[in-house]
Amino acid sequence: MEFSQLRSQFPALTQSLGDYSLVYLDTAATSQKPQGVIDAMSRYYQADNANVHRAAHHLSARATSQYEAVRDKVKAFIKANRREEIIFTHGTTEGINLVALGLASQLKAGDLILLDSAAHHANIVPWQMLAKQTGAEILPIPLTPEARLDQAAYQALLQRGPRVVALSHVSNVLGTVNPVKEMIAQAKAVGALTLIDGAQAIAHLEVDVQALDCDFYLFSGHKMYGPTGIGILYGRYAALDKLDPLLTGGEMIKQVSFEGTTFNILPNRLEAGTPPIAEVIGLGATIDFIQSLPRAELRAHEQALLNRLQDELRALGGISLYGAHQDNIGAVAFNLTGEHHQDVGILLDQQGIAVRCGHHCAMPLMQTLGLSGCCRASLGVYSNDEDVDRFILALKSVKDLLL
Image (cartoon, rainbow, N blue to C red; front, side, top):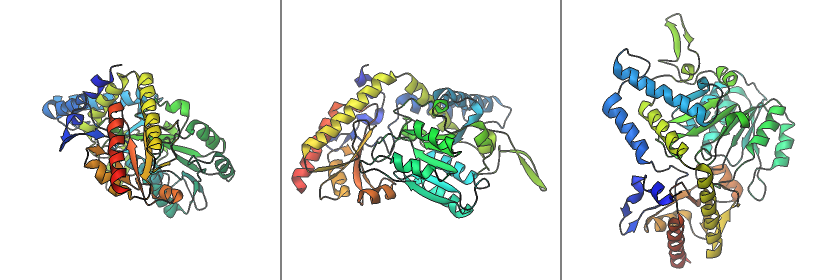
């Protein structure tokens, strides 16, 4: 594959910041968007702008047709069993809230919820809200000294009969890949519901929700080269159908009177109000873009680039790496030893290098690592060797300045 042609599809990457061309190494926070996705959303607003499911005119019919076609694309993309198992949300965070709070009537005081201790806040706080509401107990699955989920500790926790196990497919900070298929099977053996946050995995891995056999899988459009404000909640039909709706209002109802309301069937029951129509159409274009790529070749390219990035950081000296394994995906977390991560990020930015600095919405992980924060460089399909060269050269100049 000619990777330079792939990169040319992302217009934002052609810009300069001052005297420097942009090196974008913050894909884990949000990816850049290819022209095809931008064009698809623009076409909708220019020609088809209307609400979905509500009117008898041509524009609404065209909008509805495009909107529902994306549901079928997502079903095929993650190999779901039924199109009704695909719920459009505003992102991973909303989807996890929808599941966690939708389980309120199914949990009781003393029930146990196991959480990935490296998870970001979106896969922690909704469960804390559920625990507060129901009296359930939350226990984190600890990490090994190598910053992987401790499988022996997980086995011991499963013996306590958890009702829910919520995991990250890939850590948003470290890039660690969790063995979710095996962990799901073990959780189901003790009768637990399983939820997988796939926000950092979906752009890098081919996901088959039936092969994983999870109850819920979630991801966001903007981390997979698509629009912000759109995400997917996949759920096994039976598991979804038991959730109490998080939001009530238009489209999710069957019958309303002042005496009471009956709810619609899936997927409408969990999609209240006017949905993000242009964003859904943009997500459909995103899936077309990803499906057009030679994914195995691209995966090998991304992995080689990440491993080179890890090696170059080690060779630079004066760098602390966190949980940097050869089988990680997409991201490397580091600090310039003894220096504040924010200072490093600002000095890199002055040379056109965009990285993320801070606690990465994962304060419990930072506490485990003994850090107030760190820098993270993350890669996408458009990343190349020149990006790594520019980044390492800039970091060396920062190191020479500060140390």
